Length: 374
Image (cartoon, rainbow, N blue to C red):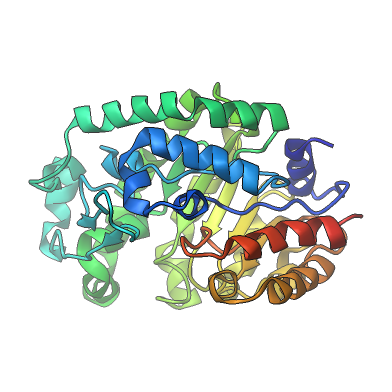
């Protein structure tokens, strides 16, 4: 069974031949190649070599890797990673560190009306990149990743996501800063909802348009769109507040992706376990939930296991500081409990840590082969 068929079976809640395994290799590709991450972030050719090396080292993975080149931080559209709008400290060549956002208050609550009147581009950072920066980097990465794309095609790997749609709450939290965002729930709740409602349709349109363009690339037949959410989780707000201030927009994004013929990969950072029951309102077998390690994936299995596929959630700390034996034991438990009956992809929580031990990632892949056969 080809990897992409294996993953599709999981999403449809069918039993594949074995539990798929999907280490999300992004920044970590630099560690695999043995160079500082800043070198990979700034050099498309080196990033392409790091991707190929990662495919060689982590043979057996079922999903394509993202790689570590930093062109997405130069994207001129409202994405949480865009340095056009948000204050990202990006690594320079030789720096052995990952990007870090410095959370400023970009707009005040009094400027919400101005935001809706002028649009997000009005609030671009004065030191934002140029369009030439973005397109030149995108072209370089497209050329440099050709050997890796060939591996994706030859192995029949499933692509994690063709594009990204952020929850409006996350964009607003980045614009206001966490403190300002949380205060707005009490100081101007109706205005907060108004801005979310104003923003959500454009976020959907951008994500769908990008996915349609990427659909023709190797692995594009996965037809997946990532919906990223963090600041509406129980790590920040209560389930009652989620229902009032975020669920409407979450529902609209997911249903728009499904209606357009794509599969939502719902990437949940923070603790969403208290909200898991809401997601039963989506069509059965239509979504894939990638859970980070703040979520109780075993509780998710009880709540959603007969309804939707789950992916995750080997802790970052275990992959970075544990032993291969500890990783294998944890993966075995995930496979036996969450993987029972199908509907499960073994993966790291969120993205694979930059400093994950290579032998631990290999142990995760081997665990799926050793314990995951149905």
